[in-house]
Amino acid sequence: MTDASSQAAILADALDSLREGVQVLAPDWRYLYLNDAAARQGRKARDELLGRTLLACYPGIETTAMFGSLERCMRERRADAMENEFECEDGQRAWFELRFRPCRAGPVILPLDMTARNGVETFDDSTVLPTVRELTGRPPRTFAQWARAHADAFR
Image (cartoon, rainbow, N blue to C red; front, top):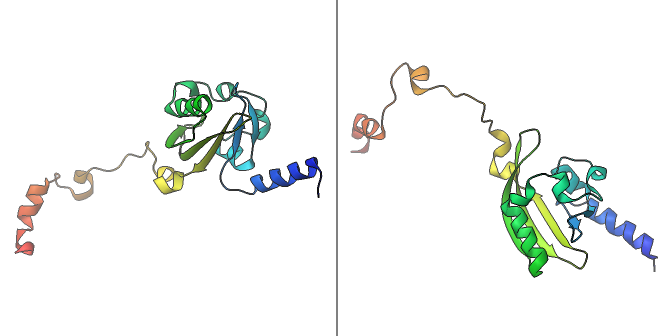
């Protein structure tokens, strides 16, 4: 049998080994706990978040659908889930599957980074793609024009 501090250390080590984030908030939205994955996903050091409120760490979050779901989870003590896109301070975007669970301490957020699955990290809005005219030297065709030109292939 181990003492309470050893059990807490074992639990923290187990939670830190997960690729899924784990965040525990107090009813006043202060971070009580977050694992390494959650800190990485939030693109902030753990020390920047622990003891501070979610609203202070991410200004404007209270106006998002994500916050509404989190608030309902805490108020109604009901689990919820959603996919949500976050715009990071550096302008990059990331997609997360978010699961919200009520617990005695306050709401628990279980974020899973889905950015690679959603292809967000491979798309850059600032990229200017060439036009059809620039690529081929000819004006673009409509599908109807293409179909007429290739109709023999389908007969």
